[in-house]
Amino acid sequence: MRGTSAAVGFHLYLMAQAPGLPETMISGSADAFFGHFLDIWAIDPSAIPTDVRAAYLKASREAIPSIVADYRASAAVDVEHDQADRQTGNQLRMPVTVLQQDWGAALGFDAVARWRAWAPDLEHNTVSCGHFMAEEAPAEVIKALRDLLAR
Image 1 (cartoon, rainbow, N blue to C red):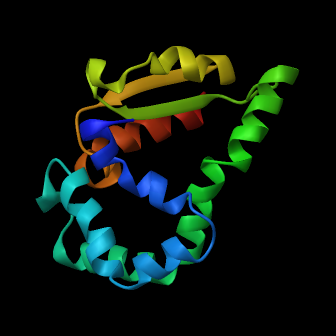
Image 2 (tube, one colour):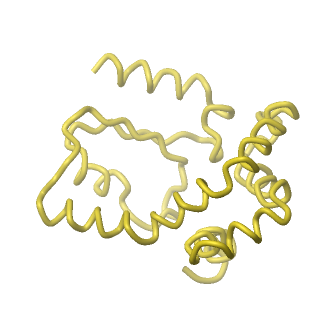
């Protein structure tokens, strides 16, 4: 990553650091940190009303160690586990539905092909909204869940 993608994805690098530093930095201004993502990741900020935003911020403040540990794992142990699964040919045997933001060519890879390697029984759909799909595209999320449960 470089340029704009690195600037947008700075949180990935921050939270991948050794335990202590990211937690301390984020805790210093948790509402500003998490609020930043609520502001820039929603295409329609009005889809996240004030009371819902407050609940997100409160839950995020209370879960900083868990949130950081999850991101840290995605840069380390999760990669090792994924490589081991690929080497042994492991796949998800259940039906899988993926809803993904419609980034078009900006995504930089074929998401359907990547997911299908893991999940042969795949339903993949793009959604024209921001990161907060349940808030910005609730009808599409509900339909995808119902369709998945029916498979």
